[in-house]
Image (cartoon, rainbow, N blue to C red; front, side):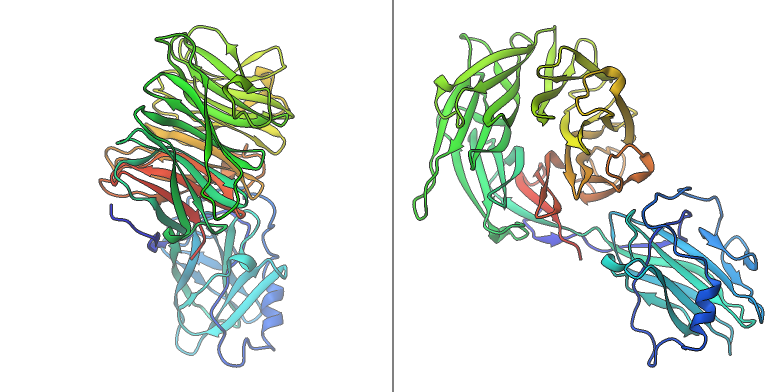
Length: 544
């Protein structure tokens, strides 16, 4: 794949809209003079009220071939392929279509409409900024409308369109044709050869920043944007954090420690856990980094894989895997910066056999908490420090290396992870603020299928849970695709609330590795490794 700064190309969906009810649409400028003012009140009075903007649809889909409306008047005739609006002199005839594409920008809606000679139709568009139907017309043929994302989307991400006939007119609606854009802008942050694996995205000083691994040289690198969104390759600057004769930089985790970027990472050559924090310097001096070995134990041991860094009670804390002893461990700095090796104290978090892989650390109700995989018992586990119990969240048999991602969603811990070969991407959330009992947890399948959900990264975007992940499809359009899923509800516990969209990938591509999701300037953004090009990529949903 070549270097590019690109927006995902437009996708054309010729569809009859699925059923259900809740949102609106923006339209082209009406004909000169606007809607017929004498007829508009009559038509508006005959339409039902707007679908509720805050509630999820009662039904996701209705099995009606052809004109697949979410609602229609009794005198609208569905012949299996289209909707004929048979109005009377004193009765309107209408159909309403729900457009449920919450993760795509609707850039055009073509209404394919036949209107007999001498007759007319009206198009009504739900306008949630005013709480009423917007009326356009009369029209004597089909028309293409342009949605306004701010005005005409419901809170559930739905748009609605109605076609209305009156005074004995009988137009026919054949279909709606949507033109959509996924809204993601993709930039190459680092185009060096074989770079970008084990990346971690965070917002540092209001700007996106990424820690990542340079495989060919075995170095740890850091990239930061000079703008608050980082939507152009020219925004980004890269530097080496740790380089030399040893192979370092896998399993990076980036966080803010005392207002400076800090990174935990794995020393491949020595089987050790390392930590680096940028020293506070003022321009034009180039920034320097303090680097320490946090845990190396005795000769021949191997510690530090799956490192995850967070700040707890004002001090850096790292969870990680002890490969030699097959334990989950954590290290805590006794100072607020952790820039000296003597600052760190290490502990065994869970000493059971074969535990600790794929761990993820977060602060849950003021205390450190970690999600991780128990290899021997094939289950996802969760531990909040200070609580006595270690909790089994989900039994996930026959799953190779299920990366877990822990975050706090609507005041409670939640985890995204892949399950077994058929369940795909799964989301679990506790019903309590601590999640310290197995009965607290409920899981939902988000994207089913074989090898779906690898490298899941969970974050809260616009107050709602979102997940970046890999979709591995050996038999479809690509071998590895970068996907994004987002819930329109605040907890993510209703399956119907989730939508998903392709961010990057196509035929014979292999991308989306090491996906790391964060909210950047209120927008979802993902750092990831493009394995085909061997580059570090960054995607942010800026819109059309």
